[in-house]
Every structure is written in C-alpha cells, then in structure tokens.
Image 1: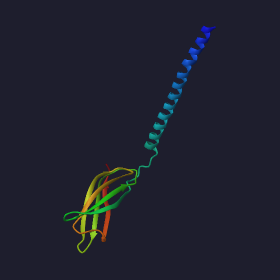
Image 2 (image 1 turned 90 degrees about the horizontal axis):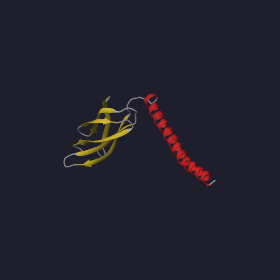
Image 3 (image 1 turned 45 degrees about the vertical axis):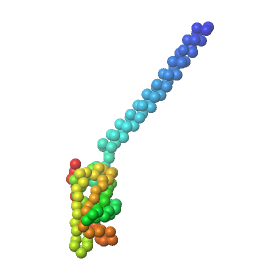
Image 4 (image 1 turned 180 degrees about the horizontal axis):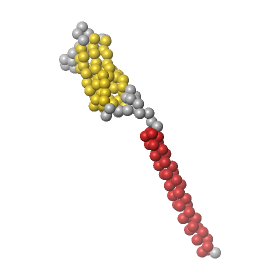
Length: 136
C-alpha cells in the first residue's frame, strides 16, 4: 500500500508543474496573438493621412548680437514629414525673415530648433509657419 501511495504522490507532484507550464504557455500564446492582431490592425486599418504640422514658440534667448527664438514643431498626424521648412517673419521697422529646415518630424512626435533675429522679437509681431515638407 505504501508503494501505491508513493506512486500517487509522485504523479500529483508531476501534474502541478505540467499544469503551471500549460497556463504559462496559454498566456504566452494569447499575448503573441494580441501583438500580431495589433500589428495587423495598424498595417491595414490605420489612417495613412498627411502630417499635421504646427509651430510653437518656446522661448526667446538674447545672444551677443542676436536673439535666438527656440521653437518646437509638433506633428499630430499619422505620417512622418521630412525636410520640414520653417519660416519666422519679424514685423519691425525693417521686416526680418529667418528660416530653418528640420530633417524630419516623425508622426505623433515633435522636433525642436531655433531661428535667429537681429532685433528683439519679444513684444513685436512674430509670425511662425511651416513652409513645406517632403515625404520620406
């Protein structure tokens, strides 16, 4: 009888790790299927629109003989924009223009840069705009 009890105990001890392995395997399969489903959805059903670019003035920093205007370009769209042109126009007694080109602004992301002006843009009419972009 003791041999039968020992054998039954040994079988139960083997069944517990086997059950645990099956639970972990099932959870792993569900996780993998969820990731594959998400990637498939993004590839097929996601919007493939245009970049939605907006320029934000961050701060004006006085330099030795110029004023540095720090900006951030936000892309709220679903597509990356390359070669993003930014222009700043300072309407003072003599209109000043400064421009820069950002290599790229990824989808749903931001990039920073700076424009330089000879006159202080604080308290004046400074307009910032995106002048164009290319598809990467």
